[in-house]
Amino acid sequence: MQIVIIGSGNVAYHLAKAFTKKKIPLAQIFGRNEEDLNKIAQELNIPHSTSKLEDADLYIICVSDGSVEDVSQLITKTDCIVAHTSGSLPKEILIGAYRKSSFYPLQTFSKSKELDYSKIPFFIETENPADKNLLIKLASQISENVMESSHEKRKYIHLTAVFACNFVNHLFARAKEISDDQKIPFDYFLPLIDETVKKIHEIEPKSAQTGPAVRNDTRVLELHEQLLKDESLEIYKTMNHSIKNMYEL
Image 1 (cartoon, rainbow, N blue to C red):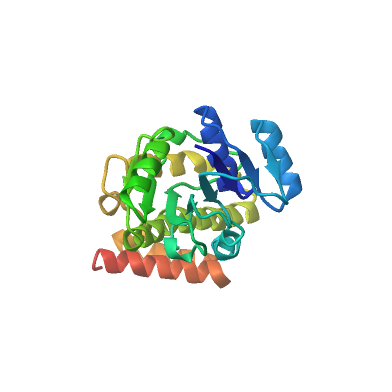
Image 2: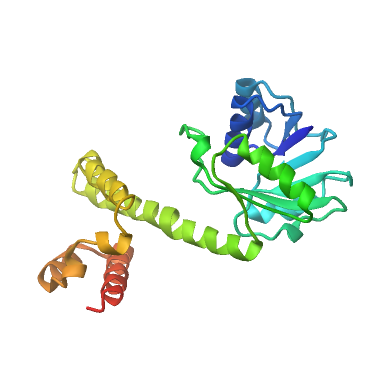
């Protein structure tokens, strides 16, 4: 099967790397950023282009959600599968006479960070059973955790991921702002962060909650509010209000 990956960002890079590690040949990686494409192509030894899209049986679109529809219209072939990698978009966002699908990897991707691809869940949606079986078989060569998922379910998977990853990382960034401002090395907090994440592998997150809000320690809460200002203060109040509501304090 001839496979083309479209995109040059984090998802495109890691998907191309996952395929090449498993010796799944790629016909091309295609995109508009020549510099990024060159780096990926040289590292992984993949043909690349910014102008001519190769003929393929499967095109995997790895671009931002806002660009998926426009990019999908570059594919004029009809006898092929086109899959996007978005967690939030329906397969119908793809514009063309080809067979539409989604190939969604549930992970946060950065080019500088190595990943164990076998642990990444993949969610597959297609228009017909034959394509579903083909994409599940392909994803199963990369990952041990592959399943079918409707767009309706995938929307909630993506929403959960935003809470569990994007929002949490933003809190890390805010925490680092406070530690940097007070000249406290952020490395001091890494064992705490690591233990927090490890704990929810064994304990339900609700049961693992600690801190002044769940104890309803108003003295500490008021002290912390005096130390904060602007957005960080609003985040602090909002988070504590949510914790209190969850535990009905």
